[in-house]
Image (tube, rainbow over all chains, first blue to last red; front, side, top):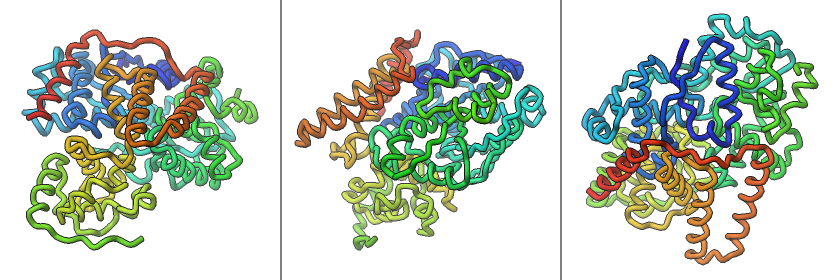
Amino acid sequence: MQIAYYPGCSLHASSELYDIQSRMVLKQLGVELKEIEDWNCCGATSASKTDDFLAIALPARNLGIADASGLPEIVIPCSSCYSRMIVSQKKLLDDPVLKNRINAELTKKVEGKIKISSILDVLVSKASAGEIAEKSIKKLEGLKPVCYYGCLLTRFPCDVEVPDNVENPQGMEIVCKAMGAQPLDWSYKTDCCGASAAINDTDTSLLLMSRILKDALSRGANCFVTTCPMCQLNMDAYQDRVGEKYGIQKRLPVYFITELLGIAMGFSPDEMQLNRHFIDSIGLLMELKLI
Amino acid sequence: MSSPVLTLEPELSKTLLQEVMDRSGQNLLACYQCRRCAAGCPVGDETGVTPDRLIRMILFGEKDEAFNNLLVWKCVACYTCGARCPNNIQTARINETLKQMSKEAHIEPLNPKAAAFHDAFLTSVSHFGRVNELEFMGLYEIQNTRSELKRGGGWKAVVGEMKKQARLGISMMKKKRIHFRLDKIKRHSEIKRLYKKAKDEDGG
């Protein structure tokens, strides 16, 4: 099965490991990712805070390229890219005048027909079909993650259909259980890590992350699992500073869901690029005898 | 937390309210102050002003307060307020609109770093069609230094900021989370045309 693929800038830079893992794991699940040609940055949250036209037009160019690929579905692992593409597609559906104005500048015009999926949408359908359990040659016993969704998988700044429960999503739990892990219930699964505020308003972001880390620890979690590259980078790269500032001694590895799938499928830690984490993410898996 | 009394300015309120509603696409008139947004706002404790208060300010035409409050500048755009609003008002969108309006009116932002960050990001996208994280952070630091010195913050503040970012940069390099390749798209002219159109629209 072929699905169009939009990696976005993060997966080509600071979260390259997520790109590598996604390709390997989805291939194992029988999904061939066809990266769309000549894609551009979606504008992320910066465009919507600076320029309403670019906030729609930048993702629109990618949607045009994706429509022209002829594939029925596109998967977008980065939550921010995913959200911006959904917002743009919906806006252009509602506003044909704007759609024409943007299309006038594009080689590949937006039609608006391609189905936009998060990586979780794809994985949940595979889990429901029993394919993840089948491919998991190792059961991730002893792994007690809290599933961290962040903001952009379930909350959109416009009226669109949300594929999971808005306040208490379950998709990641379904996938974790299919790998034999024991995901825990917790209160901060859809809370914000601050995203770019980590850089431009650090104290606010550290406060938000401290609440997330404290709740995860109080539930007895031994790791985070996420699908969002910004959540992953923030909770991973800033966790020491959060701990220092708020007197929290314990640290938790922050896994992408794809690397846990990779380990369950029998890929090596090197293949999954586990050494590219800030908080040690190999020790726990060794302790649990999963690698 | 105490809030100052708001005074209704009928003439001022009409123009401010209309512009915010038109540009953000949000129907502020539907707000009945139930404060579900305030209860869910993750930065509400820090900002003092919560989404319901901000909407009230705009309805009352309190332009200065609407632009100069911490909510506009500390909002993390998590969309919790909008997801919980019974009337479907996205205050995060209102905050985005107010940021844009205050930039157009040359009002000094309460968090200049946030403004510098988003400007630098879009500038980097205009150069390559994709974000080059190294160039982007460089642009951000330059803009930051400039505005810090302009505000009289002095070199101490600049050096402090640089040290903080250097610590992150070095650990990212160690973990191979920084890339030095140049990712430029082929049909870059399309991006240029979209930026030009964006500029023309702002002018009009």
